[in-house]
Length: 80
Image 1: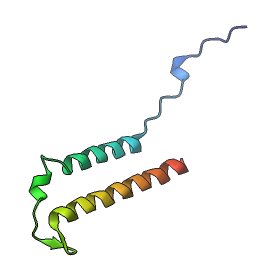
Image 2: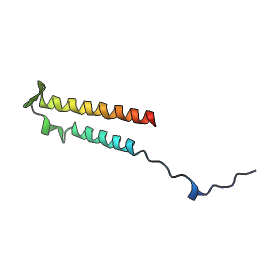
Image 3: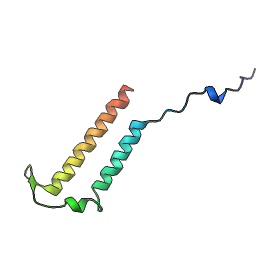
């Protein structure tokens, strides 16, 4: 026998992965922060932070944020 057609009004709404969207937006903004339109504002030698020129410190902080966000997203997805 044929299955009766399902009523679309009773179907579960599609789930949105809002955390995944937020992580994607974070990485797009991080990319913009580390390339030409934004980076030249921070491309200075002085002040020195932790014995690094500020421009290098800026990139290292971006990499640490990137690692942290990706690791937390991994833990969140694994728990789900």
